[in-house]
Length: 177
Image (cartoon, rainbow, N blue to C red):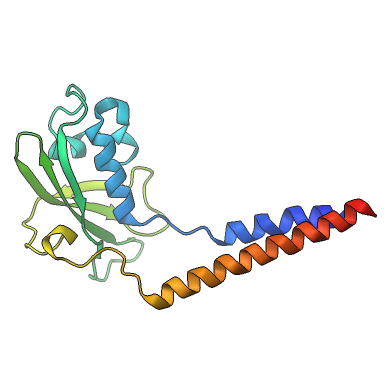
């Protein structure tokens, strides 16, 4: 019984160590995808209604599919030294093209740190975004992979497979005893 309990607890501990905080780019992309679905997409989980109206006015009444293209750039942490107790900001550039051909380029402003609000996107900053910010404009991709990172991924996968194989043999031998 003790071995079975250990075999159940070890994978839970390993998997919980794999959890990472969400990337700001992913939050902004999910917000824009939800906004494209209208009220059914629940964009209020990511930003309040007035912030969503800055990108897609009257999104609650529109049919889904008003955004033809959604593109998110790499997050930019604001480097200004925040006053005590302030958590700082992250700006995530995004670009949306409506089905009518109009384009919106702006930055989603998000609080940084563990004390961020429940609605992560606080506002939209409409200042000009220079060309080359987005991957489609030959900007830097959000994540770059190298051969070394692929090798590390394969080795981690092989290690997890070996660990699971060992745990299965360990549990099977306990059941046959």
